[in-house]
Image (cartoon, rainbow, N blue to C red; front, side, top):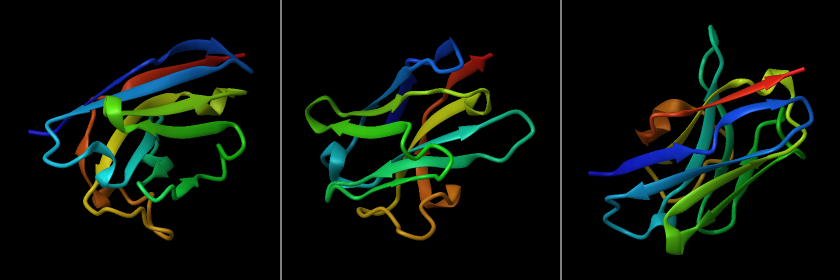
Length: 129
């Protein structure tokens, strides 16, 4: 059974940084063999895509985080990362990692949650001014 476990969340002030990690286990194939992504959900809002990455190096970011967040993966450690810099209050949310059902990240609907078949339990990020 595939399991995704996030960590690294916390409380920071505006302008601060955090690095989230997502450790995967139970993969039948190599960790980087499918598209992986980070999503977030703020109270009262829908879950939204933050960033995705696949084995070809294709990376997508939402406009709201582009230039501030960096997604990366370490296949040897089966770990997905999200480096978050210049955090703003609107970044406050529960952050989830997820595994896509296909190998390559979509260029158009990568942020559609139904594309992803496995999700972690989430890690909370709170940014205060």
